[in-house]
Length: 67
Image (cartoon, rainbow, N blue to C red; front, side, top):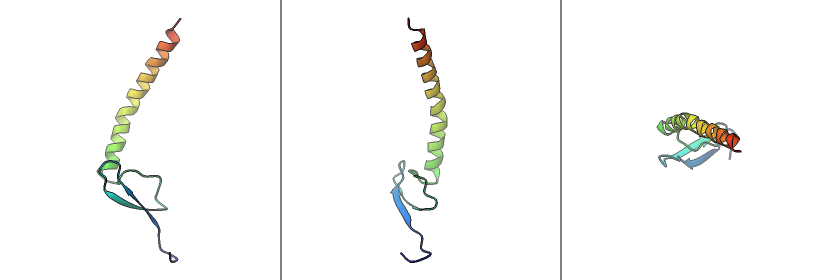
């Protein structure tokens, strides 16, 4: 690789399977393409986290009530 030439990681989007190229400086372990798939992933997390927290709270309350 020559000086000034960027290196990239190639991966397939975990949602749409599109081939994505990302430079090493921007790579944060991405699994989704930057478009609609990344937004859909964020929305899914936003909807799922409160449900999981509520289930965990119910579990803890049930365990604490046991004789």
